[in-house]
Every structure is written in C-alpha cells, then in structure tokens.
Length: 488
Ligand code: MTE
Ligand code: MO
Image (cartoon, helix red, strand yellow):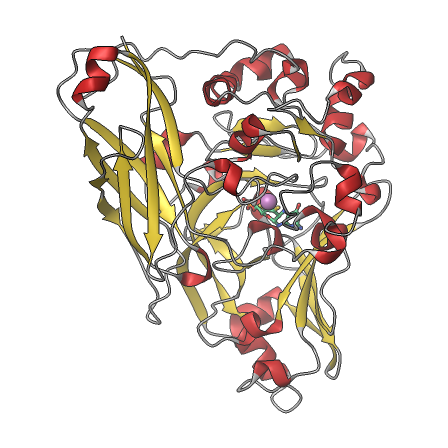
C-alpha cells in the first residue's frame, strides 16, 4: 500500500537552532538538494547543529555568526555540539578543499568541508549492494591528492618485526584476492535520534543512511603479515605477540596541524583466520572511488567505520592502541552520566572508557519514509523495508516489526543474507514485512509509528528506547528502529 499523500511534516521547534544544521550551512542551491534530509530530521524531532571543523569551514560558506554555536545549552535537547578535539579545532583554510571530487547530488550533505554525505533511505532500501557512488561518505579531512594505483605503496612496520614497504601492484600479484560483502557503518549512524533525546556532540546529524553494504575486494592482512614475518609473529596464538594492536594511517592530513587520520584494531582481529581484515582496492567490482579510499583502504568487517582507514599509507604493529584523537577521544563510548565537555575530561570520560571496535546489533526502517501519511480507513497492511546487521560477524537471526509500539509484532521476511564460509555474516540482512495497522489506532487517527528490532545469533537485541544507549558523543545509536507516520 502506497502512501496517501507522501506529505512530510516538521514538528514545531524544528527550526530552532536550525541555522546551524549541516544543510543550512550550505548555499541555497545545495540546500535544496539536501532538502530531504531536513524533512526526515524534522520528522524525528531532532534539531541539529553542524559542528567542529565542519562548522568552522561551513561558516566560510555563509554569514552565520560564530557565536551562535556557543548558544547551544547542554540542556537543549536535539542539539549537536562542537567536538572538543583540540588537534582539529583549528580552522581549515578553504584552499585545502580545492580538489574535492564531484559527488552524486543525491547524497544528503551533512557537512561540506570535510565532506560528509548520507545515502537517502529510499536508495538503501533498493538494493542489497549499495552503489559505490551513493555509498555514504565520511571524511574527516581534505581528500588527499596525487595517489595512484600504479605508484602507491604501504609501509608495514612494528615491534619485533622491522620495516617493509609493499607496493600496491606487489600486493595484487603476490597474494590471493578475496571478495565479500561487508557493512561499513559510521558510529554516528542514527545520531539524529540521540540528538532528539538529549544534546550530543558530533559532527553530523545522520539518520539511518550512514551505513552501506558493498562488495569489497583485496587481500587479507593476515596473509600479508604471515608472509612478511612467519617467524617473528605467532599466528596460532595472536595474544602471545608483543604487539597487541595494528595501527592504520591514512594519507589524508589536516591542512594546518598536519595530523594524519589514523585508527587501530586489536592484533587478534587482524590475525584471526576468519577475521577477514582486508587490504582493499576494489568496491563492487570496480576500482575504489577517491572518496572511498582510492587506491587502497582497510575493510575491517564487523567493526566500526572509523577504523577502516582509507588512503592507507602505513601499518604499524604496536604495543599500544593508536594515540590519535579519533582513537583516544572521538570514537569512545562515554557513560550516560557524562553530559558535557567537562564530564568528558573527567573520571569517567575519554581516558577510562573503551574505544569503539565491534559494533552492536542494529536494524532500521528505510521505507516508508518518515512523515508518510496514510488514509485513516486503511485496512491493508503497510509494506515496510529495512536492514539489520550485527557486529563481530554475528548472523542476524530474526527481525520483528510492530505498528502498535511493541504490543504485537510481525516477523519480517529476509530478502537477502550472505555469510562467509566461516559462518560469519559481515553483510547486512535486508528484510521486508507487511504490518497491519491495529484497529484502535485506525479509529484514533493522527500520528503513529512503526518500530523494528533485530536479534542476532547470540540473542543480542536492541534496546527499546534511545535513553538506554544515549551518550554525549552520539555514538552507536541502536535502539529500536523507528519511523514516525500519520493517519488522516
Ligand atoms: N580513513 C581516513 N583516512 N580518513 C577518514 O576521515 N573516516 C572513517 C573511515 N576511514 C576516515 C577514514 C570513518 S569515521 C568512516 S565511518 C569510514 O571511513 C567511512 O567510509 P566511507 O566514506 O567509505 O563510507
Ligand atoms: Mo564514522
């Protein structure tokens, strides 16, 4: 059953502080292209502010008052505050962004510099494999220049192993190529829902489109390390090695501070024979696009997007995890008691909390779109589509969908699933369900919502309310997927 009007609505107050939202930092033309984002955001009730380097860069694009940022009070729900990452607060100079590529205008621009673009829900709903040019883009820094597949090389070094340089052509010819579908999900996916609950700090007010499922091709890091250091590394018992972490460094750097993007994962994941950590040069059967890491990136299945370093230039085996701000601050899960910058620096702040690695079980509704209006007399079921996924390779076992706030549930049909020979499921599960609107709701009319929740093979499931997982950085939002709708 299609929507009656396809109208969208914006709750009162959605315009408040709206002058700082990502879309509104843009010139009028781009703003129109991103109109869909504002509507969906509005429908979720979140008012969000573009932040940090994005805000600072964004201010150069329009005439906003820098002081507006400071007006966001920590008790203002639905606001996204500027990140407190000192290494990166230094404003960028516009010319560092002179060489950015053309991007598909259908991407919903969350931030222009550095570029953050979200895939529209309707496009994600259309295919198991997310098209490369429509896959969300999350850059922290200007796109690095002058990298080519022919000339590119990576240095591999670390404690107890020495240093080697491997060219990309060498990687391609010396090792066995592997391809599989794997999800890349930004830790900020669905942040707009957390922001609607309580103020968060983060760059982009993503809806559920900061996630994609592509077919990645490359060689296993494990094979490379095993061939480089068959004696020095204990592959059978990874935790017995002196090195405990693998640090990945990108070729992209902050124009002013010179900081390169980096992140690390436990060595154990890299050496796991079924871990599938990939040095990757291919996306959906073609060369990587510049925005997705051309000529070489990491794919770290089941882990957070932030560690899947693009434009890979160095690999370091280390006793310590990465000391970069993205590991030590930005992608750490703070407790609910931390509600402001001061708390983040305190006893239960960045320093004592774990960096995000394996992601929790997740699902979201992609269609119908938020704000869709149905006739109040509707008797037919509503066709709902979405995705489900769990970190660490846990297969998705079930998805449940409800149109009455969770009193009654419909089990969704899986449209497509794919697992590795090991049984690990790095790809998402696409699903659909025909959900009846219960009679009491039909007579009442007005707003209602459809919710979904997934369960993985380890029986992990999603919490009902966002308050259970809210955190100051707005990371790992995995409460029940929700889409607000209306009967008229
Ligand atoms: N790698 C580099 N070098 N620089 C970056 O800014 N962003 C990370 C990760 N790898 C980033 C990076 C983050 S936070 C995410 S979510 C993913 O890339 C996004 O990958 P995509 O842009 O291909 O979707
Ligand atoms: Mo991310």
